[in-house]
Amino acid sequence: MDLLRWTLIFLVIALIAAVFGFGGVAAEFATIGKILFFVFLVLFVVSLFFGRGRRGL
Image (cartoon, rainbow, N blue to C red; front, side):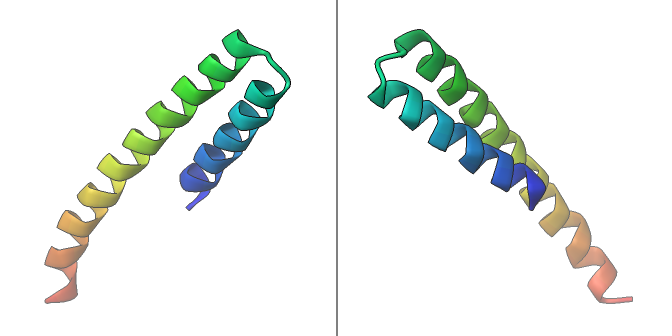
């Protein structure tokens, strides 16, 4: 769950930077947050797929 926590941290930083008018910084943090979110989703789906096979043993 650490990856999801980092995604939320980057989202909050991007929102704070956007409020203060740092458009370039906010866009970079938002991009990093999106990348981390999609990596989290892929890892979550993979863990569901492989975790399902071990449950029957």
